[in-house]
Image 1 (tube, rainbow, N blue to C red):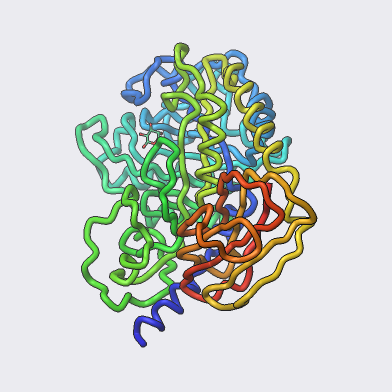
Image 2 (cartoon, rainbow, N blue to C red):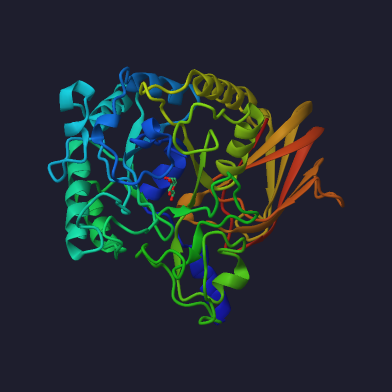
Length: 446
Ligand code: FUL
């Protein structure tokens, strides 16, 4: 009985409005890594760079925005400050910022230009503000948290609506050799106060890291995970599992996060969807001799991430002129085209659907098409607003569950894209197990 009650509550762990908006409206966005590193050819700046090195002579954030739209993405997350501590805006709290860059004679503000361009092009805008700061003299002391909060407040209050705040968990040494204890809870309070519609990303956040930077999303990707993992997410929605107590050393790279054996041992569950971050190039920053990944690699990552119950944050770094590299712009255009082409003609729109065992934990959906068609993708989506439930499902060809399934899967969540090769006039989706009744399942066929 205890088990049943726990599963019932696990089936009802829901996203908050901001998480739901992110999953539904902005599942694909573009990270923009831009800092003195772009000019010094580094990935991690030392913090000792002369601000004068940052001089993007042809900065054009509209060019970024157009390329992002062409890719089919719907937002930008800009590195307002990376680990080197240089601020891409006119911060009142440091001289290590645009005030001392030759760009626009020290009056430039890249955050302003990027956020304005996003608005002009109907994109959402968010920012990355590195807690690790290799420049600030305060780093490693309690004053640093005030310094960080002041900067966070500048960004949260000066640039219109923010959709996503990216808190890098990296915590290295500052200029004085000390490490910092970050006051994440205080930072999060500021987001809630000034941008109540924004989500925040962190290893342990409201949106959590998928655990790698190579674009792989887990086999069983759950948005419902133990609070022990996402401890900065305070919206705990269940009591402890029936076998609580034994979970140790969870990390985002674990492949079994949120699975049944794990949640039964948790102290409580939170809704924290994963974000997959990956760069279009080997580095996060622009380096002349690096090339963008192939179209196939990017499209495949899109399928596995947006179509694997995670959001996709694809990094595209501007060059020294402040422009996206033409090679990357071309790749983004190709990617957008391929996504649009692959998912433009939903064959399920003309299908007649019958459901058996509707509203139970094991419904079966049969889609009959007017004629035989080639199917390359099955796209499934749970009604994520009411929780994530499906634990096992199969897809078979024909009307009715076949002995040999064409595909068997575990989780679905907000979107599951399944590449498949079928030529048929009927497809059966059988939900084999779920944590609670599956009232609705969206099925698209391409
Ligand atoms: C990491 C950083 O150290 C990298 O430079 C990059 O910003 C990546 C997105 O996050 O933690």
